[in-house]
Length: 407
Image 1: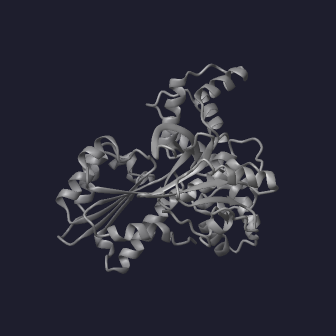
Image 2: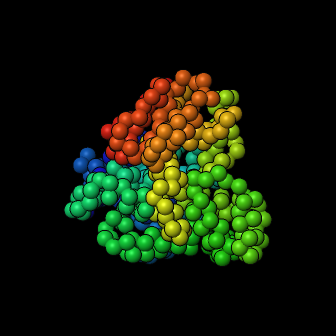
Image 3: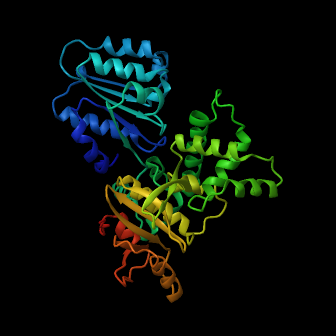
């Protein structure tokens, strides 16, 4: 049983027959393989048959012997029997050495439409970017959004109220398979094993020369503090106070880069609101899924706004917005959201539980002279909109009942 991931299919459909390599990137177990199956199903409905579909999942041991460019190229070309168009699906392509050479050759010599997936956010960098510049298009795939998780739970027949499901989503995130488990202990075990699998397969490999113990401690700290202002110095001090082995800033940033490449985190840059420009300075990290943050945090405080920020950030990214941390001369705006030349500003709160909280969240926008729309998102059901600043219930926003307007 699975749900149709229409948000992504809608983006990819216009490119089904385009002479571009369709690249689906995202963290392991976010649903890329199932999405490939859904694309295949739609294309079968257009008339493609088994004889013109070639698909390989490189996580499958039976394909281990073709994990290099020459063997993979031969395997595929040997199956092409005519000049009609072929569909080629290559799942977790990063396991193939020099895969970019195969893709370049296939695209140049065959009548085909190529779809690939990978668990590395830098899949389109380096040699592949050089060989295939202008010849591929990337689609970033995220774990289930709250709306997708809600729909999937209904299909599974889970009897949970909307509020109960949201608390569950805050805690355990949106990895699709985790919704199949009922007990929290089983969910936690699955997410922990998935997290460890990412470390083993994508980060701490034989060639990486990474100290596993140090990496796990630093990665755990970064995950547990996702959404908080980042400082490598604070990490150094934290480990020093814990009596741990000292780790220098260079190593910390190297580990951050490894986490980002494995799609575990996003590193979010600062936007200078006064100067109206994005800065190169990285302000915060957000976890690609709050479940990963949960298993790296000893105690979850549901009132911790950073968990809510993380969910809002991931939702915005899945909607193809550019997202920055906003800086004013007086403080911070949680998010500057940009689409082309349009933008809006967002503050995220747990509950607007008193006048002091209301004043704090709404007054954060006072230093901003920009006329772009401004929003406060919280779990309150009452509408606290005022002074031209719109208030939106977080669950309504995640379910698409309330939309952002960018100008």
